[in-house]
Structure formats: structure tokens, C-alpha cells
Amino acid sequence: MLHTSSARKLGGNQSDGVESAPMPQRIRIGRGFEDNEKKISTKRLKDVEICIPIVYGTISFWLGRKANESQSHKWTVYVRGATNEDLGVVIKRAVFQLHPSFNNPTRVIESPPFELSECGWGEFEIAITLYFHDDVCDRQLDLFHHLKLYAEDESGPQSTKKPVVVESYNEIVFPDPSEGFFARVQNHPAVIVPRLPASFNLPSPVVIENVNEWKRGDTKDHHLSQWFLNFSEADELLKLATARQQVRMTLSLSLFY
Image (cartoon, rainbow, N blue to C red):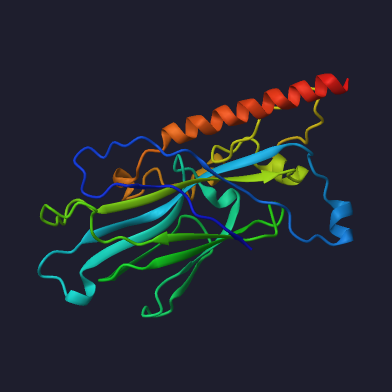
């Protein structure tokens, strides 16, 4: 089981919503237990890393003075792609653990978009557990996010039109991926894969007959997308890191030969 915490960005009730992106937080996921039969059948690409940028967070709206005291806010917690692409290609399931005062506090989301909405009055920590497809990883990833209902700057009046937004950016790194995983995602827009030298023996990419399958769970047209924070700066840093990996691999291959 893996645990992580990361830098956060707060949208709050800011007028411009513009902030510099935090430095990328990289979560490196090692392989879990594999039995001998699986080890033999699974070929892996040594010294290759596949990375998936994710954002997780909450958006909460105050429902106004006429709202019930115990239902003063409506909020949504979610895990999305950093560029709002469909994460279902890597993530199989997301489990959100809410405060025990909620009915059915353990919520299981089996397909993207990985999110849920609720109403309430209090702030608390939400545990998010991500499970990956079998060819990706047999370990789960635990994330923790604090639900915020009130803006950091409470000097002004609350507004029902502007929500409080808190998001965290992470990069999940899968080292030495299986050939099947690499072939399945190497052309997917949600995944960052290094461009490897031509001499590298790569599996052929899996042909996707219906490209719309890649868009089925994206959040580009999400009804809350206007409030999503911009992590393009962090994404650019990730692309630079991927380019450096490509250079290192090219150098190591040239030295080998």
C-alpha cells in the first residue's frame, strides 16, 4: 500500500484564479508481489518509465442563507487527468472514504469520471484509494485530501456563484512497465511515454478502432471544468523530465554498443 501527500493549489473566491503551479510531486510505484508463473509470462521494458499526471481535489459551493444548516454546501470530490483526459486507461477503480457520519461512507467508483458529489456542513479529510488495471500494477495508491468549504480569505461575504476549489497535482510513475501496458497506452493522450530510440525493441501499439473510447471518461466538457485549476506549468516540467529520460537512455544505449 502506498501513501502520498503533495503540494496543493487553492482557488477559493479569487478574482483571477491565477497562480504559479507547484513543483510536480512524483509518486514512484514499484511492482508488488508476482508469482513465478506471472513473472515468466510478463515481459518488462527495463529502464523505461510511464508517467500519468493526475489532479485530485474538491469543489464546494455555498448553497445560500436559505439552505438547511446541516446541508449548507454542495461539494464534489474527484480524480481527473491533469489535462482532463480519460484516466480509465490506467485506473480501474477509485474508492472514496468519507466521514463516518455519511450514509455508506465508503464509495466505490468503477469507471471514469472518478468523482462523487454530496451535501454537508463540515470539513474533513477524504481518503482516496486508486486501483490500477492488471497489466499496470498490482498495488494500490492511497491519497488524502482535506475538504474545504470556506475560502482562506474570509474577509468578504460568501458567494453562491464562486466555489472554493482545492486541487493537488501528482505524477504517478510506473517504472519497468510490462510490454502489454506499454503497447496499450503509448499513444494515449492521458499518458506520458518517453520517445525511445529506434534501436529499442518495442511492442506494437494496440490499435484502437474507436477513438471516442479514449474520450468517454474525460472531463473536458465537465460541468465544473470552468473551475478546474491550471497545472500547465507543472505539465511542462514533466515533459522536460521525460525528455531528460530519453536522452539518458540514448546515451546508455550508445555506450553499450
